[in-house]
Image 1 (cartoon, one colour):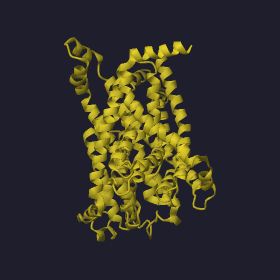
Image 2 (cartoon, one colour):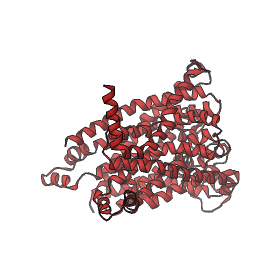
Image 3 (cartoon, chains in turn blue, yellow):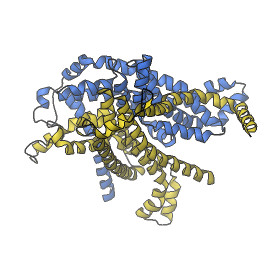
Image 4 (cartoon, chains in turn blue, purple):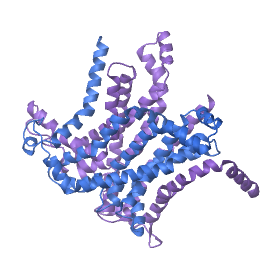
Length: 264
Length: 297
């Protein structure tokens, strides 16, 4: 082991702790009894569910249910619309394809603030404001460009020869898609679906603007949990928010790098 | 001329109806939920009951409640601080993690964690580090480096709150920059490096003349994507400083949710969109340039 290796190891450890330490600390503090948090001890040693329970009773439970409904709805709707679009972009060289792709990239870059302000106005007229359906429609708009582009890169990575073999063995075009293409694309698409769920789960601006009583978790935290003067409740809120994120990294980490390498 | 154009269109439809049919629902949806809101925002910002009106602009520039210039300044300052810092860090991380060693994959996964973490949670996580009873203050007090806790939050301390915001934003969004640059670097063939080594290239020569030119597109892409998102910064700021550190998206939220001034909120949205658009034009131009390069090779 030479000096270079030691420097590298030190740097890697430093980077990893820079990412991990704040997460670990917020989790420890979320489960620390108040008197320990307000003491001088940097690392709490006891455990309590008190703050979590308080947050739960304040309305986190309903907010989590809302978040799950909107997240699943967004995944279903954006996949129904985005997977066929991605397939078309990957498999057909039609005129204007590049323009369509660039257009989708452009919509993905569009500020959510624009969508939120305009949709609130429209939804108030249509009685869709403060409904989970309205929020699902808005989140689908945000997620759809991502789904279409990822699906396109996933399908582009599946060899055409496999589909042609399907035709040779007498499958119909739909049969080829459902029995050959889709199963091959399934792992990557599952990872993309999980990330789409997270996009919706994490989104706070549209959610806070469009809902009032039917809050999703981040909207509930932004309006209710932040209003409490109790720090430990805020840490509990952070922990509730990051559970799906940590699960996602644990399950789908292998796909993350490739998703971004080809998803643009 | 028009006749020929329309038969041309018909021919395109006849030949390409399959992909068009597959694309139509998604494109219609994006039109309805993204393109229409842009048009609608103009109408909301500049028209009142059917007549052209500059009330929103007046509010933005002259109302004592308006924090427009401050918000614009803070938004630009935050972008100018966060984006270069995180790009430099991500670049160094990519260099260090490019060559395989024991535990490298774990390190890569750890660095990517924050991409899945929301801005609300990131703000709260850094709040647990930085409050008067937070981890950093307790450690510094314990070591005797400070006598009283460093206060990061509250109106008088908003310069420190800005520091906290920069830290939380770099922490949260460096993951995205790292993933884009690292993914780009991984596509580079090992043979290139080996060839450079065969010819006796030093580490710095490899870096400057082999690696850097090849990951330049990834760096540019990451820079532009992050700048676009930085103009929309909201929740981290809202959690850590509220309106003590006003930003454009935060003011849009405040005028919309607290004041019900749709026209002003729409105007804020348009200002953010204009900032994004000017960056977006750069992005599209750069993408096109890359497509041309691919076409040539």
